[in-house]
Length: 351
Picture 1 (cartoon, rainbow, N blue to C red):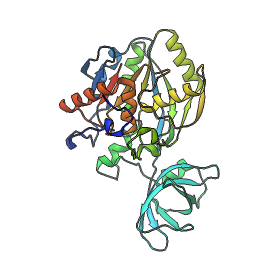
Picture 2: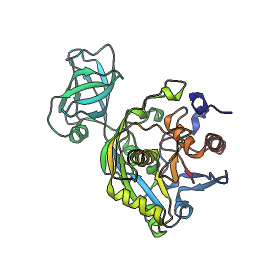
Picture 3: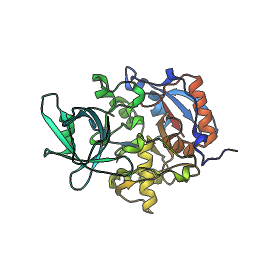
Picture 4: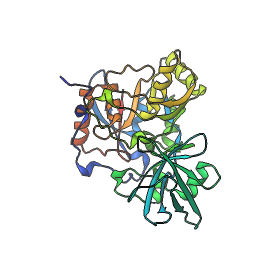
C-alpha cells in the first residue's frame, strides 16, 4: 500500500536522453498519452487529435500568462563580482523581489549593476532579506517592471535545458500563442502545444475556450525538501478567475460539457477560486493551494498536462487527479515508449 503523504512515493528514474531540451519543429507535432481514469486504459495519440478526443460543449481553460524576461545578469558595484538574479515580483512600494547568486555575501545597502544591450545601466540596491532566500532590491530607475525587464532582462530557461542564454527559437517557442498578460518566470507548458490552427479546429468541433491567469513563480524552482508532504509550505502565486471564465465554466457544466484545464496552472486557478467561493465566483489573489492525494476536485473534469519532474508538486497534482498507481503506470509507459519529458516535451490527456 502506498503512503500518499511521503515524498518518495513520487520519485521515478528518467533517462537523460528523454529530457526535451529543444522544441520540436512545430508546436503541434507533440505526442499525446491519453489516460482514461474510468477504464484505466492508456493509449497513444497526437496533440493534433485533440479536437476528436474532446467533445462538443467541452471547454478549454487556457492560462494567458506571458513569461517575463526575468533573468538579470550583472556585477556587484565596487567589487565587480558577477551576480545573477531572477525577478519574482514587486511589493506595493515598487521594490523588487529576487532570488540571486554571487560569490561572497551581499550586504544591505550594496548595489548590483545590470547593463542593457544598448549600454544603459540599471542599479539595484539590496534593501532587505526575507527568510526564504528572497532578496528585496530597490531599482534606481522609474518605469514599469515590464518595461525595465524588457530592457535589462533576458528569458529565464529551465536548468534542464543545459543553456542559460535563450536562442531565437526560445524567445518564440517558450511562450504560448495566446500569452497576453506578462508576469511569469516560467511558461505554462501544456499551452505550448497549441497553434492558432489547432485552436480553430477545436472551435469548429464545438469545443469552446476561456482564459484565466496564473503567474508562475518561485514554487517552480523550489523542490520539496521534506519527506512528509503535510510539512511542505507552498509558495504563493498570483492568479485570477475572471467573471467571463466563471460564466463559461458554469454554462459548460450546465450543458453537460467538461471543463478541460490546459495545464496545472489553469487547474490550480479554477480550484483555488472554487475553494474560496460556493457557488463559483470571479476571484483573484495569491494562492498556496497544494493539490495532492486525496484532494477532491470541484470544477475540473479533464486535464491536459506535460510530464513533470520527479518528486515535484506538479507530479503530486496529476497523481491526485488520476490516482497514484495509474500515473505511475502512465509514466512507466511514456518512458518505455520514449516520450519527451518536461517543458518542451510531449503531453498527457487525463480524461
